[in-house]
Length: 114
Image (cartoon, rainbow, N blue to C red):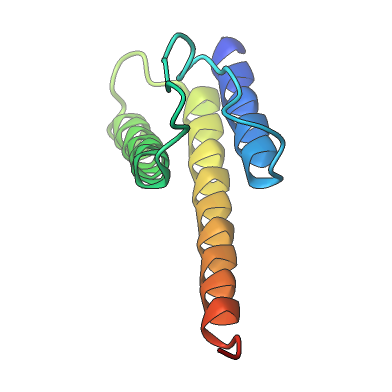
């Protein structure tokens, strides 16, 4: 079983948690290592779009593995399929929680007296 993918996912989750907690700038992960953000910082829309694309890719990958296992494709592995499905579920739950926090922040700002 290849645990490097799990380690990569854990690193991404830790990086997201560090950014959400406000602990400095971007954390070097396998997905963003070597990128130069310059002195301006990180563009929020770019980070959000990349995160949503990663969630979408994990969902599509899990669905593909599930279809391959269902039709009995050679090389289809139940363990890999189940792990991929769980990772996709966790990433979707994480995204929903981030969305909820953003909506709450927006509502708090809109309810502030002027």
